[in-house]
Length: 276
Image (cartoon, rainbow, N blue to C red; front, side, top):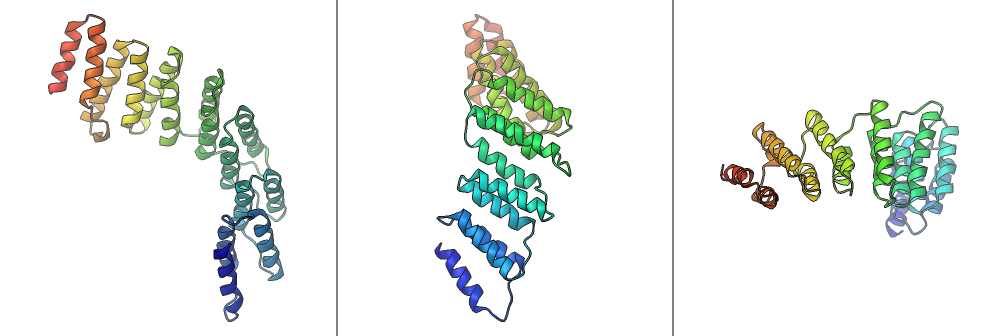
């Protein structure tokens, strides 16, 4: 509030230089941290109208953001309706702000509402194609709830994303691979492993991705598949992906797993690989 007040003081005493929309947007940005952001933003818009200063897309997105920060989703919807009426249909950035608000609620109903918002985007006029950022937020919403069928909803949204030719990015895989690898069922570890293969084909997998799938197979006592994951990690490192350099702990865990199965030969093989 103090920062916003000082900004207005400067604005009011600087009569020789008329403020423009960018200046008012700076005030709208300050309003995000005020004690009553919804009312503050409304006041700034009224001031802009008094000054015959038209808002732009940034102005409206900041207004929506302020309402969401205050938890006032109805006010946010009102601003989205107004921006469309004034020739600024909500864009991906607008909707991502709304999606993030609901995803942070960490409930099934919120995750379902995120999917509803995706449908709203597609049905809007003009139609808006959800991008990878939008889908990543919906995926995040489902991964944050503990319902027994949440994993199937996550996978369904991911397949929908691919069907609409939205290319997964690093954030997508980082959200999904550990999530599925840590699940209680082998079918989900298989999903994680397949996602890791897919990521290796399109991007560079990181240590977090390899470790998640590796540990997922060990947790299910499938030493053979854990071995394959470690071999792929070694091969990725050899191809120049320095971020995935295996560490002694990887070999130790695999050796212990083989020894538990009384497979001395395989355990010895990885002892030699560790020395290499």
